Picture 1 (cartoon, rainbow, N blue to C red):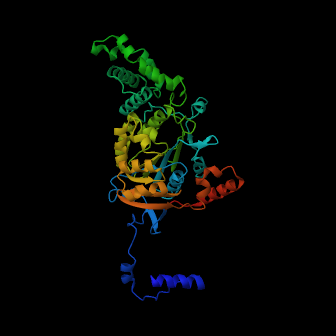
Picture 2 (cartoon, rainbow, N blue to C red):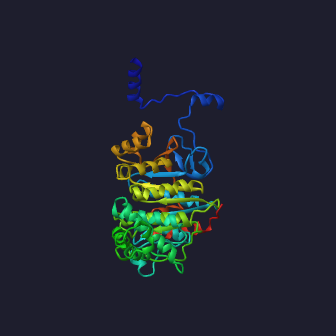
Picture 3 (cartoon, one colour):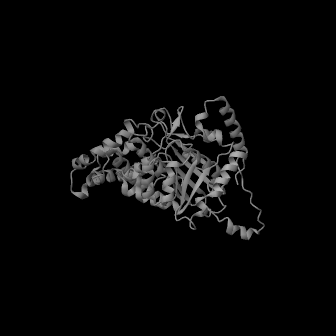
Length: 448
């Protein structure tokens, strides 16, 4: 007590008093016991740099392909967080850095956009790649089409996709009789249309006018099968002559380069809240499964923004579950970007959502409100300390959980990447000049 009074009196007279400690001479081995480590071990130094681990300041390197089979049971990745906290910047820099490797290829389903183009348009242009714009209005004037009956898709895959489209549109499972009518129509079209790609109109016409040979063995009348397939025909008619007309009602467009390092499907012209979005994602996902994935040792990344359209639909989620299981054997890393986990775990597809979430061995969580953070922590099994800091995270800082290795990481963006990542600056003259310089630098970078 007396010492405290003395210090206070001296401080008042002479200003703040600092204590002086004598230096200590010791070895580095002994010093390790004095300054104990405060951060968890990293993930190794092989892969792409993400940023810095907040508590230790050391570099944070992550690559699902390097970690798969050792520290990761699956290469799939879930990114969560409120808007404006850095999810988009992380995705874009991660893709740009992965593309430095020669054996990497990325597909992006770009569901967000501004100024009439998707959010990934700048990066695609910088790499000399044209985005694949799926737009009902543009498709009617010679735009891009994807054919659900593309011969590149197996007959089983075509039928499964047709069922999914119908079930998503009807928001219920397909009844047995309607399913039989669809199966019979598909089999008839597959057997009879040989001189061109079959298209949806062929299925619709057959549903409205069933083939007699397809129903004779069942002992039912043609009129009965016709009535069974009426609702199916009406749903498919929407893709041919309704608000989705033009995108799926003809042969797949030529010129889609599936060997490009980056393939961007621009979905920004589709209403994100309409039934069109999950239907579109289902068609793109199945088409890619049969045309893009190949056993050629290329490591592929499939990044989906607004991924709740997939995870929150039981029928679309089932298709993607198969894709994820199949893709692991062929070097596929699925990246799902979602704002809120409650968007999917409390929905109609809770069972399917849970199955997909379990496949994501990597989870990155940006700032969320306290209640959402607690819900996220319960679903993902995060440690208590991580749940408590999620609401306090600043933009660009996230909790990373890589199969139980939980760290807090600050994402780092280089000056060359900045004008390509922050699209909201695209309207300023300085940003345009910066972007042009970034594009030149990116074009000059060699692939490893």
